[in-house]
Amino acid sequence: MGWLRVVFRWRRRHERHLAEYRQRLEQAQAAAPPSGALIPAIAPPRGSLSVEAEDELPSPARSARAMAVRAEDRDRAAMLADRARQLSRSGRHTEASAPARAAVRILGELAEHNPAEHAAALVDALRALAAVLAGGKQYADAVKVADNATLRARRLAALDVHLHRPLLAATLRDLGARLGDAGEAIRALSVLHECVEAYRTLAARSPEVYRAGLADALDEFAGRLAESGLTDDALAVFEEAARLLTLADADVLAQVTTRQANLLARVGRVDEALERANSAVRLRRSQAEDAPGAAEDALAAALQSYGLLLSGTKRHDDAVEALEEAVSLRARRVRVDPAIARRPEVAVTYAVYGLVLISADRPADAVPPLAAALGVGTALNLPQVVEMATDALIRAHAAEPAAVRSRWRAATGEDAPQWITGTGRTRRVEAGPPAPATTAPRPDRMPAPDRTPPADRPPRADRTPPPDEENPRPPGRGRLTGQPMRRPIPSPTKRPRTDVDV
Picture 1 (tube, rainbow, N blue to C red):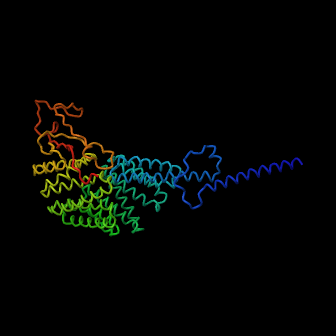
Picture 2: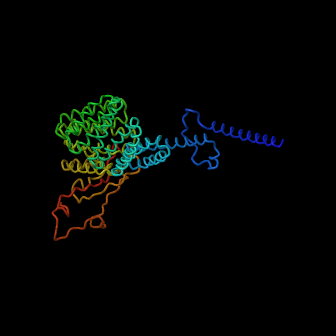
Picture 3: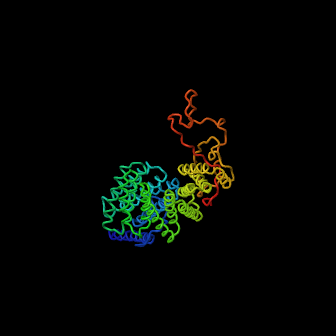
């Protein structure tokens, strides 16, 4: 009878343990999401349970918890990558760097544990980071990141070429652009040729899906060919890209047509260039009428290119009309979204408008847009815009001194500075870093010019000492080379408030 009591005791203990196991399993299944349902965006914070408590959980509960954590990280990385792209498109590349790097870091950790699920997303995040770095003119770093993305895309394509060939083609296109920006022209052309061939293969299988991608790759390839001096080859590639596209691909078609027009004008085929530029304006206008907003920015850029071509052919009235419409579009977009005022293309449009007015023999009318472009370019650290506006203002004053001084006083409330009138010693004032605000800086926040007399200024370490009296240099010549010196780029004391200000 003793052995029978032992058997019954063991059975009761076993049934009790089995009941506890079933109870814990039912609790875990109730906590886990149902089959086919989306995992909630907000998962329990990682590390909220102790190691002992997690070990006590059944395997289904641990699996559901891990899936929730991965989903949260993946969603957070996607949100950071989108934020970086938005900031980069707004010209705020420095601010876009942090979220882009964070997205790469998160997806890199996920890809280490599950490459099959997260490797493609990591490649996309690397592409976004490379674009942000290139926008901030960190071309060498952008090439390194793009190379890394291309290497990972090649590995994925080697595993499943049909699934990952589109990703490889897009990554090659980005790498070619980054190499071209960094000045590696030969390698850029080689990579872009491979990209075009990859898109040709894709377009042969699914023309409707990959036709626009092939045209965009051809457009980038043609642009790099033109930069390398292969003009005839570039024009042929542009023609091929334009033939591929229809009105359904209006965005890419307008982009291709605009770049083709600029290249035709460069080689002297002005009539064809004007025809293509006008065609691009019509396409952009149709897009802006259908969907106002971002399409208006593209229309302003197309009008700007068209106006420059018209000005070059002495059709000054038509050029001024085109640039006036471009400026009004920029101003309207700034009123809707003040952050757009920090985009470099806004200041460029104002500067180009001033140049076109000077070419149309209206130098006094060019003062307000040029002063606005000069102030915004100085605040956003855009040396090319600053130099363009400075040279244009000096030219305008040389044409109509009294009228230009009067317009400057009316626009800014101050007399024209000496670097415009040429009545004093000019100096260079470097443009400072961008202001943290989201709109164009106000005139009262701009740095005041240094009015200390030259003799009273403390010596600077980076300033070359004056030449010896026995070896004087010719006036207006450099100390070492004897070549003509570059005109200094001053900073205005105040710029007029325009539609760029909000």
